[in-house]
Length: 395
Ligand SMILES: NC(=O)c1ccc[n+]([C@@H]2O[C@H](COP(=O)([O-])OP(=O)(O)OC[C@H]3O[C@@H](n4cnc5c(N)ncnc54)[C@H](OP(=O)(O)O)[C@@H]3O)[C@@H](O)[C@H]2O)c1
Image (cartoon, rainbow, N blue to C red; front, top):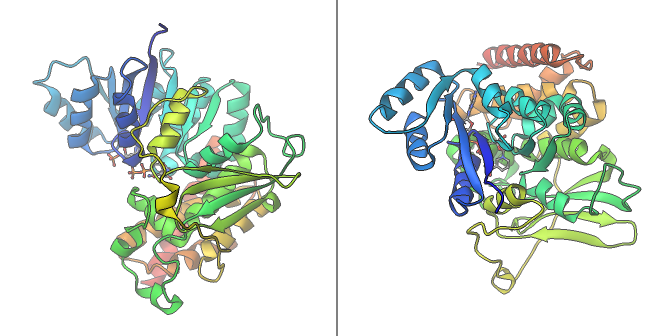
């Protein structure tokens, strides 16, 4: 039998990280956890270290790393505790690592994810922000260093499964006419528009079908998440904005579809459980069990579809516009949105002000293409500062 695949899990204490470890624990003969990383959630990281005995545990936050060392001092573990961004990059690119799950939330995930691509790893990509911010740079790194990129977002994983086998980035050659991204519509799909100004973070985070981190839950409620996924699909599948369509499907059973020129439409279905795409990407091209309930179509009985209402979901329009504009528009959209969502979660901004803020930051920014990662980080920082200023003015 071949040796187990060695894994680094970036963002192991988050929703995707925990689901990844759940799948990994079902297949101890196939996977070995080499490194786990988090920001500051010491208690969960300590539990994960005891259960998976990684060689490295990285906390972004130095104080958290010190607390983790203290928490683990009585345990007889082979784990070295490290801190900081450089350590995240290091464990993402260690020569002994085979695969990296990129599941840090937000733009903080970009540098370590890029490091994994540059080291030619098998990259399991949950951190969509990397592609939104640095799509060209990241895809260039993937191709240049022969990394294997496997999407974790359930929609992109579905598209990956429904694409022609061996798809190499040419829609026409594959006979693909369009990519159809499904969206649940989130918790406010039918909320009267006038009430959106008063919705609370708790209401926004109560997703009807998926259990997710708070940032992506708010993005799902505003449909910015679907907008970011449109941009992600553009880079992953080399698809222009005109050939990506979003369809609302409240049951979240069809995870996405690929439409072919002969009229065929191929969909991937499953219960809304992230362990399915995670298991698919871990084992690709094989299949492994994931602990996911089999789909009971008769029980579901009805699958509904509708077109997104761009008046209700202006963030979706803003993301399509940013993709069409090109340059660094998507990175600016992402940065302004991260600040807006954080402010909403802290109750410094109303939910309906999120798109207003993103649009005004975009309108006031120079969206030229960044020459490299440093310039991109400067553009990101400037957009964040502009967003904070805007929020301060609104207060
Ligand atoms: N959840 C889903 O169902 C889902 C589906 C598709 C795609 N995704 C994507 O997957 C990514 C992770 O989402 P999630 O829902 O798992 O998020 P989450 O539950 O909020 O977890 C985020 C993880 O990132 C770590 N982290 C946060 N800020 C960090 C920083 N500045 N530097 C380093 N690590 C940091 C967190 O550590 P602490 O715990 O210490 O804060 C945690 O381990 C996102 O990009 C999201 O868009 C998620």
